[in-house]
Image (cartoon, rainbow, N blue to C red; front, side):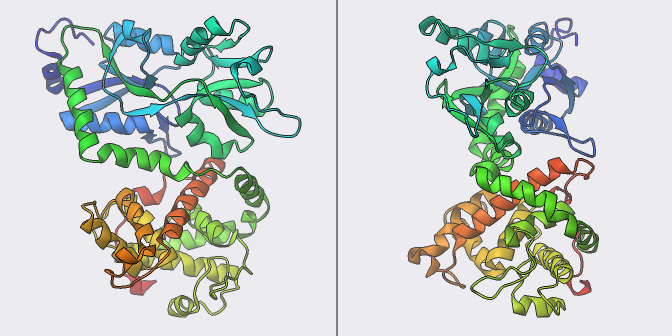
Length: 454
C-alpha cells in the first residue's frame, strides 16, 4: 500500500483501486480455510460484507503474531485488522478501534477429570504452569492482576495461537491457559475434557483496528457500516450462525457422541453417503440428524410410535416407500429423501443456511407448525425467512395466547429449536473428524428438485 502518496481521502482511494486489504489470523473465530480451501470465519465474513458494502474486492493477509499485526496496521501496510481484537488501553497507543462487533471475556481454562481441582481464584494459579499467547490482551490483563497478586506467574507463547493452547491443556502439558470466551465456546465441543474455571475480566468489546491517522474517512465508513448491520439485524444473523448452536454444551453427551462416532458410525457411513448422493445433501449433516434422532440405533422407538435410525413415522415411511423402518439402510434413505422434500417445499425466499435449519425443524415438528411459527414471527415484526428470528418464536407454539391464533395449534416448538441446534453441534464435530469432506452442501443455494422423483 502507498496510502500516504495519494492525497485523496482513503475511502476514495479504496473505491478507486477496487480493493480493501485486511490483516487477520488463523482461528475458528477469525479466518480459516474450509476443507475445499474456501475462506471462512466470523471476522472474514464481516469484512467481506464491508468490502461488498464498499463495492470492492477483499484482500486478506495472514499473520500469526499479534505484534506483527499491530505493526503492519500502524505503518499502513494494510487498511485494517479484523482478527477478534479486544480493545485495550495499551493497544489504543498503536491503532484506532471501531465500535464493537461483539463482546468477550477472558477465561482461565483447566482440564477436568479425576484428581483435577478446579481453580476458584487467582491465588489458585500460583506455582502452576499458566500459559498465554505472547503480545495478547491476556498478557496485559495478567500484568494488571500481578499488581494485586504478586505470586502470579505465566509463560508467554509466541509460537501458538489461543486455540492451539487448548491442546496443551488437553494433553496436560500445561495446567491452565487464558482464552477469550468466544474461542472456548466455539471449540469446546472438540475438547469436552476442558472447561472455564473463572473469568478474569468483565465482557470486553472486540472491534476492527485502523491506523492512527488524520484521514479517518475509511474508519468512519467502517463505523457507519457496523452501526448499519447492527440496526438491520445482519450482525445478529452472522453471530447466530457462528455461535448459537454451541451455546448449550453438554460434556457427558459429547463424550458419548465421540465414542459413538468411533463405534457406531462406521456401520452406517456408506449408507449415509449413498443417501446423500440421492438427496443431494451433505452426508455428515444426514449423519448428525441420525444421531440426534436415535444415536445411530436402528432399534430406537419413541412412545409416539416413530421408530428406526431416522425415526420415521409410519405414515411418512409409507409415503417414501420404506417397508421396514427398523432396517437402518431403508431408514437412512427414507430420512434423506424426506429432509430434501421438506427443504424444497419451503418458500424460495428462504436462503441457505436458514433454509436447511428450517427444513430440519420441520422434520422434527412438522411443516405446518413451522408455517405457524413463521406467521407468529411476522406478527411480531420479525424476518420470517431468518432462522434466528423464527427460532425465537417457535417456543411460543406452547403458549395458548399464541397457538390459538395458528392453523395447526399447539406444538413443542422449544424442542424443535433444541433439535436443530444439537444437529448443528454434532455436524461441527463430524466435520472436524472428516477433514476430507467438501464444503457443506447446505450453505450453498441448492437447485430445487422434483419431490416426486424421490
